[in-house]
Image: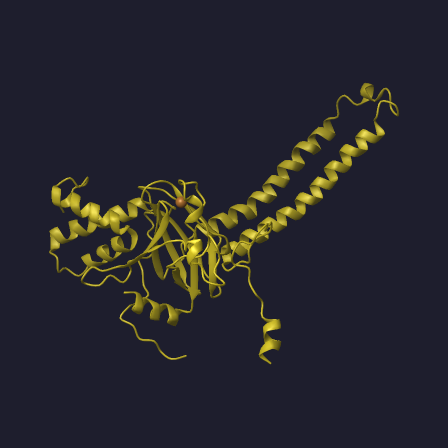
Length: 252
Length: 83
Ligand SMILES: [Cu+2]
């Protein structure tokens, strides 16, 4: 029975894999929106490419100098044609801009967050601070997140991708990230959650996201930041709210 | 599911219409200065001031907070903290 059920269980792709070309599986509404926009535009891109190439090939074929030696005498100017090929692309661009801007502003919105987490990029690791629950003694929960070196990897862990301390977030909660850098530019990116935001020293950048399912999501620093730029991965673990509270109690 | 009790409340500073953009640098700084203006006017135990403290702790990186604290101690904080 258990075996039978495992066949039905979806295994999500939450980490990059060798030679991967497509997207990772979405775990956040924002990323689902991005993928849908990409696919929709991609469909029309194919339609447009085929029609443009069809027109070009037809012109090359029917108006070649051997078949139509004096075509240039009659085909020097065509007002209607020029209007059509100017206005049509303009309309296509507008049709792309509307859903694109809608998504952009939807993702920009910080919808009454339940949790604020500060993310600080360092050369070459990330550190996370949970300071919403400041106690009277002034303690906040903060920790560094280093990549696990290849020599310490355990079976099943990802090389160059797993870290010692993961960023733990509750599932189905709007979470605000405040992202900054402490030395040089870094970029906090987690594809499955649709996150990519620069970590700029002296500036605080804000993004909001919501994890729709529990899971472990992998990402990497996405702004070249020095020799070990490729060795400061990001691991976000989304857990249920009760589990998150339990973790919070144990972490402080 | 059993009820989990915790000393923590999942709650954070809400949206602030003065800072609607991605850039929240000023949000952190404003709440920090507002807190110290608030306590120098009303005293450390005045409860409404606590909101500013919660806000700047949620928004400012700990490194920034300790730097601001040092600047206040040295009198080099780049804003007036007088009410
Ligand atoms: Cu980096």
